[in-house]
Image (tube, rainbow, N blue to C red; front, side, top):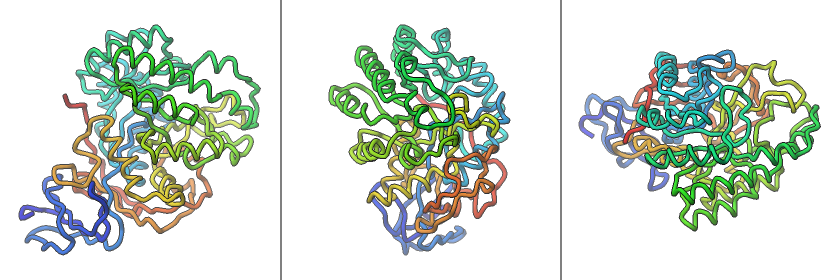
Length: 445
């Protein structure tokens, strides 16, 4: 600790060994030691006494649609990363679609990296995309440092990112398995979606019926079968159907290399409370019933669901019409994800240690960010400082997202982020931001 430049002290520090009073020493952007609370501060080190505020590892959100370049009127790296910092997120991994061009070749990746470099307030990594015609581009993208490859099994909603049929999925997955990569999948079966009633209009019940659980369940079963056959590593995105949980658990028992995430909106919002015409609640797969939500929470507690990510998917307000069939499907959640999940988690008997495991440790592990996700020596000094008992009412005007459409408007949430730190530098505090300090991250072998 003698070379420490910064010392953070709190009565509640969440470490891999549990929550305890501790002093955290930082030098050159790295945690050098986690020491007893009353450890002396070395000469020349700056002390930040956080009192009883909780010191968390910065959150890692591995499912974010930044849409930059090409659809920057929807979102952009400047606004998305500010919103993330305000919510205690210090690293995000950007999805390959909704930007133009999509991240489906190395050249396209370089374009996105160039755009992000000067705008990122937090660290940013990138997913590549798996399309029907880009199998030849997958290995070069892997070697260029993407963390894995996103694929859809049903239409994505944008023409430039078509979905894979089962034969195309097999080809892409075989290629990715060949170099030890990761395929992350939007798993809804298009045939089940086509067969579902499509009534349109403002009634949420009609929209929910148009995206049935069996569309998820069937697609997940097919994906697991492919992963088992190829011994490939796959990750199920934004699980909303609790009916798929036994299938996932059984696959893991058989040794299938499958992980799964869910999202704050599935854990905190229910179909029963969605007003008709309120397409700020629209996402695909959809927010389902309260009984379904209870089972997702149980799966998190049991470890069947690995992690919680936002699937931040914004658009301009004009695309959020009152017709659920035609409105853009996506929920903006970067700034509010920690508070939303913590509010519901504490009501269900979970602690902040659980939230950190779901939203930082396991997301870091998913993509191999071994310097993120925990407060321990050798990790990046990325922190969120949280007042867990303070509450606030969500005011859309206070959000940093480019378009301040939110399904959480008017809700009272627990957990106020007091400050956010990136490699030992405070990048956000009390509504104020520093200049962009984020690094562009690439997968390491």
